[in-house]
Length: 150
Picture 1: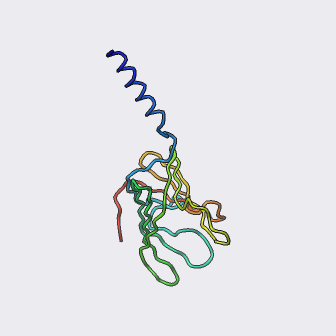
Picture 2: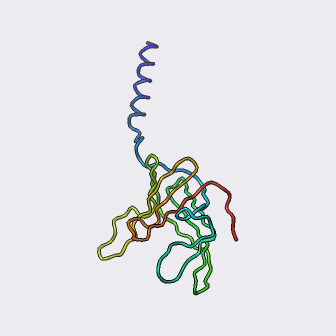
Picture 3: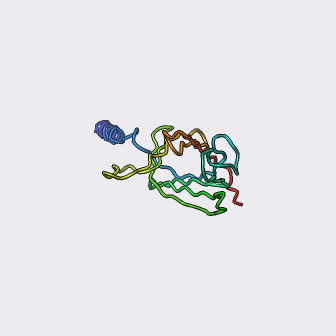
């Protein structure tokens, strides 16, 4: 009788593990500080594009267990001399080492929807393509180093 109970318990445990979607999206709780943009240390310009130039002084990326990504960035835009801190909250998905941040709802008809940001999580670093498919690629590299605000 004891052996039958152990076999039943083992079968139940295997069935429970088998029903878990191990390849599904993961959520984490993590905080990152922006270290570099396209390999340049901060503060640095956002991208070499025509028109006004934004200088990024600091930025953070926070991922929470509910699947939300909060990106906060402090920048100054020249020649207008406007400076401010901006925050965007999006959804995120992690599959293995891949991360995608943005919206996972279909884009409404006749709407102009930005593409999701994509990247990799390697150890304590997140490398994120901010504008995938653009002719002016921008890559953010976040690390777990402390945030330095100016």
